[in-house]
Length: 566
Image 1 (cartoon, rainbow, N blue to C red):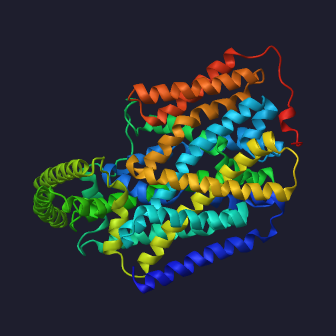
Image 2: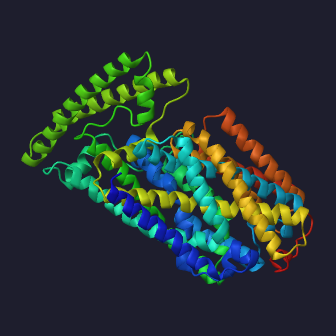
Image 3: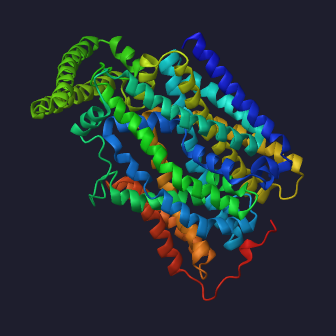
């Protein structure tokens, strides 16, 4: 990074954190630390909800995913608007009227303490692991740009984020989210403009669409009913619906957002905002990945985008084999580039394109085979798997983006990472303190005491996230990894909340044993079948509902779960 990039980065980063602290000055006590004294409006909450999900993984993992597989991942988001409407009608009123601090606190009022504790524990495990993945994402950027060790960057990022989260609480978190989400919109636009401007002068919008279409990179809909296929219309609409309901309706990192609202209307409006804007945003981010795929038909891409892995294999006794693969890659890319330029000229002249298209398809396949061979070679040298999908976009930034603009995009990625990380730390801290410490260890204490414990819990979860982040690089695509981790737990959590909200004769034992059975069933499906992970959410929910319905009680419950007393 140049001096200009550092100035842009420092000004933006410092401004965001300062603004967050300024907004948090009105916090009062533990309710202020965790719920901003329930005084926020729908705009800030809506942007925070979106920002919590749209972390640095969104930029790094999603763009790399699209570079490899095209736009198919958008099917994952298609059911989200439907989920938001259901949440507004079914979930939000229960949580808001109950005046709870955590989603799981509601389960004790509706069922019993053991159901609450189990649900909260599952959240802590799933979100704690996911937070490690979120922390790992910006470490990739620094390792590529600075050549820094990933372990060092993880520790630095974690320390900074934990520090201001401990001081500012949820209000600092939400207002940081607001600024970074607005800047993320700017970053998406800048990245798209930069990619288009980097293409040869004679390559137009239609050419980009055509080149990407040769390998169906723009295709986003797969009508297959194959449950082992990760991304289809049906896995997105059905599995994605269950995942969205679970994530936004039972995950404390999301529920905590709309519990900060000044009214039920404000809570609902914040989710409706996401229903309208989330899918278009993801389409644009995925388009960055496909544009990178088109861009590298003209500019020579690295054979392997992970520079540290390249350095490792080049320093080994297998360096000659890797050099041969690189030589072949350079040759094939040159042929592909010539074929692609020929196709552009032929399109302009209205000539036959079939020959050029066939050549491009063949060269694409050869380059992919060379990349596969290189990853296998690196894996043998390292003694562990190699996957560079998360390094594709950072590699482009450092190589092709000019000074100043690079600083802005790096700042956006860092802010996105820290915004999601701080959001999750406040959620983990609130569940730890409210659902366990206050419930079992210190039910009667001062606000000052709980505030101190909350800050200690934030620090502890930050350490946990950093430790897991050191492992996260082995999980492949980060955007898939973070959702796979959640899908092990989310379906079962959704099932128990549906029992609470919609089955009046549901019992505490039915909810508790249903939750356990659902979790075990999902783990079995994950371990012993090839069913795609989006369907795990359906499996968990259905199993919990079956067990819960089978253990229904003879009488209806009284609606005491909405009582405001804690």
